Length: 257
Image (cartoon, rainbow, N blue to C red):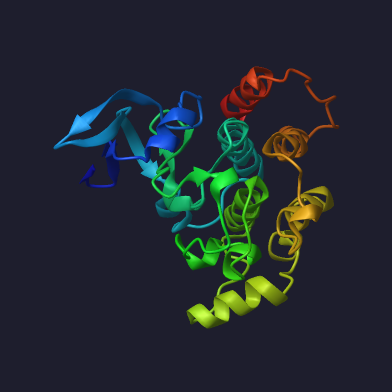
């Protein structure tokens, strides 16, 4: 449930997740909306999410592309949030600009886990859901999805943030699906000459048709984005397994972007 007040989202969400999802997912990461209360409403289980104010990323992108460093910083934060979900065995399933809230103080929050599901329970008969322009190939083909499916969708968002264009746009659903499955978009640097070649490689890896060719984890993607966001030489990866070091670095990047 979200009330829209002009260009600002004032979001205090009540959501009814499945019992298996409630047991496995406890959103409490800086770049994802946190749950504040669990309970029931009219006999339905629900989670009450934190109250946030800001603009969805899709409205910001309506005005054009983002500064390169900011795009990389925000994407690395979202990757960290996805990594936290993936470690719980949860796939977001609907990564897109409309589900990324940019708060009034410039932070990014990954929203709307309403289509999320447990990776180990995802099957080939999962119905198509979400927004076609951000679907991954395995989703269209009815194949099992995993954490790398979210990374494909984030790659689409990252391409759009830097170029102002979606890589697989078409006038029909069939056209979009055909491009996702068979076309290779131009490197982002063709649309935005200020983008370094290293960024082209990161996006190309995200948008690989074969999940095995993508980043193995969301944290790996975040590590590739950090030096690009800082426009500096590659920094040695941070080893902590709990992800706190990654989130701290991403937060510093956001403040400097």
